[in-house]
Length: 419
Image (cartoon, rainbow, N blue to C red; front, side):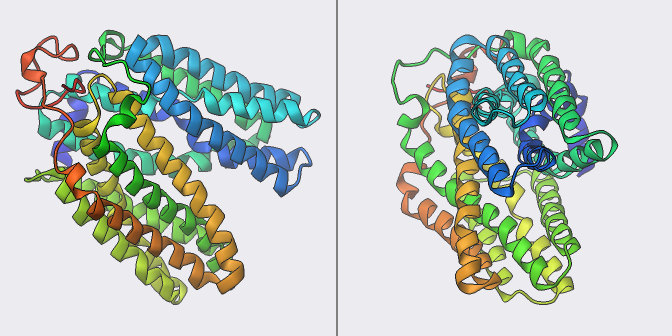
């Protein structure tokens, strides 16, 4: 298993691009907890902290596909680095000015969110030209999904360490400076500098004109909803058991399950259409969420949380392949950015729905939201099967892709240039 991942990391530029992207995304991955801790330290209420974090999240959801489209049109360095600098500037303004002017605080987090660079989509657009073969790229997608779990686990921990040693304001400053350095590392690399999207058909809908992509986004809205609801349900479960540490155990178990599932999924070569495979994975994901409604004792619940996470990273990794197959020509970064946005909006909706569910029916109902989200995600995939059955393009890699000037990509594999 490890040999396959080491093979990817030994490829020229691969380790730098993966590490740079993860570091560059730290500000986005840590923003919610950093904003809440900063607001509370400044004397703001939890309501204000939640509102500022929500504005940041919504602004990010708006900015990602727009910046992704700009990357497809103008290239990565001309968009990613200016966006990273603008996003960091927004957070720096918040850290330096504080809450003395609430309109300025809201404006600062809005700027930070809108200009969050689409490094995630950008990396997936680069993998084909860096790794060449289809199998290696698919394994890189799985490694990418696993790395996300690590980032979302380590990132908040890093914020709390910085807060402990310095202050919440210092944490905002340091994390965002680190993020700019990560983005800089990516855009200065040769693959990023030379990458060009395929010529695209002028259309105001951009990537969203693909029925298959819309079907995938609809499904992953509900996957995000399920995951978002679990964060709230986990807090409610910890309250029921009188120990805040229980929440940490549940989230750690969920992350561990995702790490194991993603690592195993990426180590195997899969046959058959990825759309069909995705339906099976999402069905298993939904099946893993349903037992959480039993809310047994802490040990058993921790095991159930780990099991529920096993198919999350494989679902995300498989969705990357489906995005690449269905994104219209010249829209690959935008398409990946739409997936990020939809998943994030779904997670926000899940947290919003799970709260009232706790009030109405207790912890069991809040976990039921996760189960319902998983089932809804599967239903969408099943209902839209005819749109997903036919990929939105035929690969033009064998015809001299702009992303593959040296002919590294195997014939029949899309390098992000769709016809």
